[in-house]
Image (cartoon, rainbow, N blue to C red):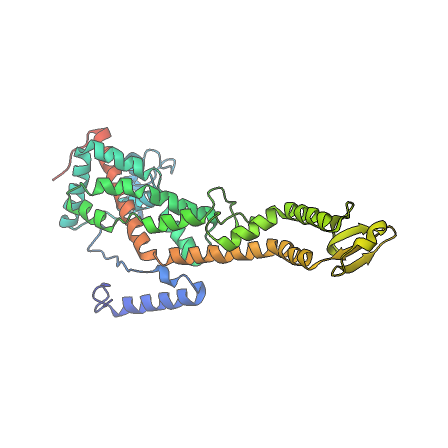
Length: 356
């Protein structure tokens, strides 16, 4: 990307400031620098300068008397449905446009949404189910995302086809641009829905995060962990039948692990390949190769399940992080669409007309 495209051409002080900022972030954040995919320069030529006194007297975001949102301009105009839209609405009010072309472009978008009541309603309905993609992707990139955060990302993506179906029918230049940047993220949604258990706990430490069917190795270990008791009973019945020792039983203690217990009266029927593990007053305890193998699997299953789930979850997170640019563009488009719908709804509710 050239300096001109970043609006830094000829701005030596701005370039130094950006370089210093990126260096600081690289040193302190370690793995979050890739989240920065663009640069926006604020200039006085773009926005109307409003000092603190003007903002307070105009009651843009809070009233003078009670310092509350209720009664402010933001309270009147803000019907946004997403956290992303709410942040952008505040920015729109605090940074009024100066460029006439940009103003009329925004007006045309609001006017079309004002006129197309049914489409506006469908967009508002779709936006109501969209979580904060911007904040979720910050967690994904920094590695602090939880299983339910990823499910929230997939849920948000599930609303995008409905929104996209409407934006494709809109004609205003601003709305056409938003439609172009709006990605339905079908692959991201499919990955998360296939991998994450919809009833998963909030953190990785409790297990049960990865959905059954996503990993055959994890399914086998989980099955072994859950059904260990049944496997031991099956082995017990097979050995009873093979040896004729009807009182034989499989047991476990923390010192010796799993064992086959045989009373002294049946010692003569014990197979020669069994290994004596412990001698008690009334019985002997043995281990067999099959029981030793099963013991290793059962005792190691819990630890391996936790480790494997963590590895799989990290793989899913990293795959999602690779789609950062697409998701950021979509989030920005959704935020703009949310604000434009909110302005159109305010105009419809309050019978506003568009100034020339």
